[in-house]
Image (cartoon, rainbow, N blue to C red; front, side, top):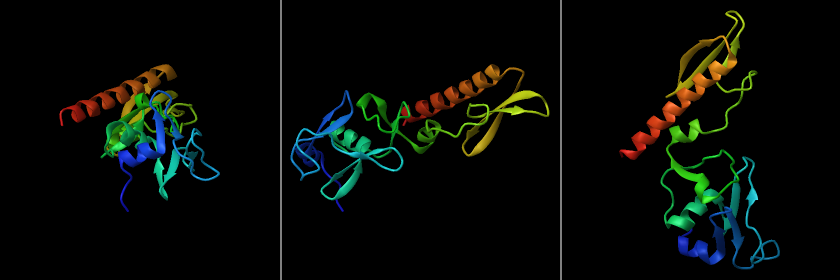
Length: 167
């Protein structure tokens, strides 16, 4: 199966990089009329569009539409909203960066990586780096634990971006 080309994509769809919305340029039966918004949400919340009998994720089509090539890496939604396909919200990301920006299950504290340690009666902060948990410390105040977790995450993302820039 050959992937769709930028030329074919532009024959079928218009893409507004400011709104992130694809619209049909051509009539494709009763369900898709020229001018109508293209695509539907999949089970994971991503917008998908069927073109020439192949289902594509809209964020990957947006990249192809604007840059002419299929992305070789993951496409990360910076604001974590999987249906927000505005070009300014999309970036190339290796798996590590993509996972650090993923929505995580929150703990009972309401904050990822911050838990109440009842035995010590303190807030504990931790972060996972390269599949290993890194303990960040215990804190009297929840806000201090949250700040420690946020600082560690910012440091990791800065390091990842710096490494990506040097390649």
